[in-house]
Image (tube, rainbow, N blue to C red):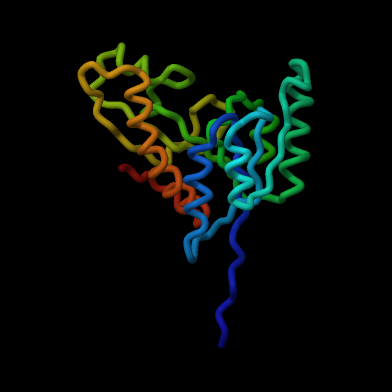
Length: 203
C-alpha cells in the first residue's frame, strides 16, 4: 500500500522593503519535508530590495504600487486580491508589508494570514516599537507572530521571542537584536501554522 503524497501548501509573502524575513521564510521552505513552498513575493514598493532577492531564489514576484491608486485604498486592495488570488495561496505571510489593510481584505483571507510585529504584543502595537520599549524602561523587548485580524496587531499570538534591553541601547541597536530573533521565530511559526498547529511557542 503506497502512502499518499501531500502537496506542499502555497505561501504568498508580502513585503515593502529589503525582505530579510521573507528570505528566512523562503529558505526554511526549502527543507526536506517542509509543508509549504513560496508561490509569490509581492511588494507595494517597486524598488523594494526583497524583490530581487526573491527572483534570485526562483520565486515569482509581483508589484502593486499603492501610489498608483492615489489614496483609493479599496481599489488598491482589490488589485492586491486579484494578483494574489492568481497564485492560489493557502497562506499569506506579511513580512514587513507597510500598509494597513482593511477588514474587507482581511476577511477575504480569514484564517490564512500571519504577520510578524517587533514587540511583545499586546505591548506597543503600531510603529516605533523599539524606542517606545526603551523609553518605558522595559527590561526586555522582542517580537511576536500573530494571526491577522481586523484589529491592528491584535490577532491571536502564535509565537514570541524575547531579547534583553541593554543599558545604552538605541532603537537601532535593539531593532538589530530583535531582527535576529525574528528570523528564527517566523519560520518556526509558519511551519506549525501550515500544519494547523496554533499553540503558542516561545524563544
